[in-house]
Length: 221
Image (tube, rainbow, N blue to C red; front, side, top):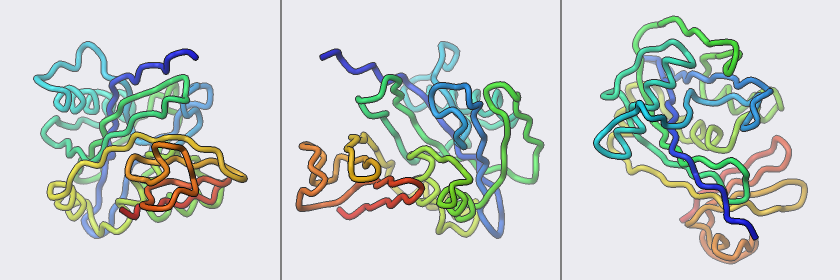
C-alpha cells in the first residue's frame, strides 16, 4: 500500500462584514481546477516561500493575507487574522492540505475583484442563506466551508463574531472518510467510531453525514 500524500501547509480566510447582520465572502473556484473545482469556498491557498514568519501560525496568516489579495483584491492585514480552526484533508485523498482558517472583519463595502481564472465569481451572503442554497443543490460547499458556516450562523454581526472567536479555542479537524448508505460520512477524532471507522460504534459523536445535499453535522462530546 502506498503512503498517503503529504498534507501541504495552507491558509484560508473568511472575510466578514456587517454591523447588524453577518455576511461572509464566498468565491467560486473554476470548474477546471481538480481540487474542489466549481465549489464555493473562502479565499485561500497553499503557503509559499514568500510567506515568512516566526512560526507556523504567523506564516499561515501571511499566506491568508496574500491569497485574499490575489483572489479578491482585498487588502487585509496580518493583525486582522483571527484563527478559529485547522483542517487536515483525509489520508484517502490524492491531494491533501493542512489548512489554518482565519476570520477577518472589514469595514464598508470595498470592491471585490476576482481574476476570472482560478476564481470566476464571488458573492456576499449570510451563513443561513448559503446553507439553504447548499441544501437546495444551488451552492456547492466543501465540508470545511459547510461546518464553518454552521458555526458562524448564530452570530448577529461581524463584531459579535470577532469577539466570540477571540474567546474560544481553535478547533482541529482531522477527518476520516467512511462510506455509508446513499453517501459518505467524515468522522472526527472525538467520535467513538474514529479509530475503527465503525459508523455505528456506541459513544461520543463528532461527524458530518453527507447524503446528496442533505448534510447533518453532529458534535456531541
